[in-house]
Length: 430
Image (cartoon, rainbow, N blue to C red):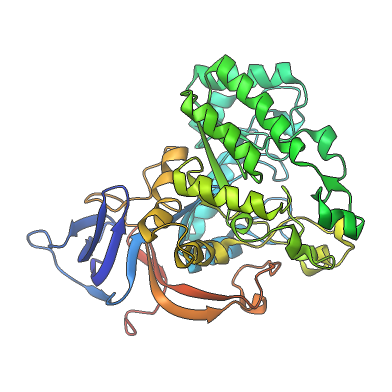
């Protein structure tokens, strides 16, 4: 139905809008007008957004719905439901599913499954190599034609530098984006925490900063050689961010993202073997966290992502080194980003740009903005609502989070996908 979102503070970074105004959405699911209804527009529903923020639906560059292959952890239905409850309308799914997203059929299957439920959109990221084995290149053009928004080998490193060069050359030839998880696998070895004071005290095998910086250095050299458009995923160290900033200053076509949890947590949060803080890349030192915040503030890092990895409870009950890494992070993406605004790291429009327009630009999709004619993917949240996260009440099937009991300010009230309210009160309540 056609509707109006009335009286909210509209923040649309793409169109440089930050004003209290009305948003009109037509029955076809597109933005029909901003501030003023088009002639003949018939309002069938009104959402009162007085005191609320209205912004484009959030775009998450990395989230694993666990389907296919790990449905005992989560499913596309459960995780897209969690996404819209968190204001996220677009998700990117890495290719490390089972089977791997290395064929057009797999890419199309995941999209069709998401469309079936009519909640958040899922854009697959195709595999660079078949089976993520790092030896034989995939048909990248076919994957692109099937809807993949980029190519990556996910967390499986391509150790043969020549194969990595060939993959980048192939992608560059067709103007495809390569998503990089840069890491030296030999330096990482079997590490599970940042190599530093905490890992030494706890007797945990450390992952040195050099594991990341060596990987970034190799990939930057290949990017310069091939001219490929590249995106660095989940940078965790201040030194790696500095290297990317230097490359951007030289004109290399590179962007980067950071996970929301790396902007708030450090190695100290591991405490006494808190497996909820076991993530890859690991939580690093306080100066690394501060360096990531500075890079986000100054634009070296363009986007904040969830890196959502839901797990069943048993996966986190093993000893720290053996526990499954990852956080169920969809529902804390916006609250953790808004906490950066509270802490004066960035302004609200800047924070929302890192969740909407900038990630949409990285994947080249027509999302993350609310200009007239745009698809009405919309997030509405109350910036003043204070609430405490209870992991037991999370919508995601995965309740693995180190933020259980944290108090947040800012909570989603409505989410619209294609002009349809998929989260929020029923028409009789709003």
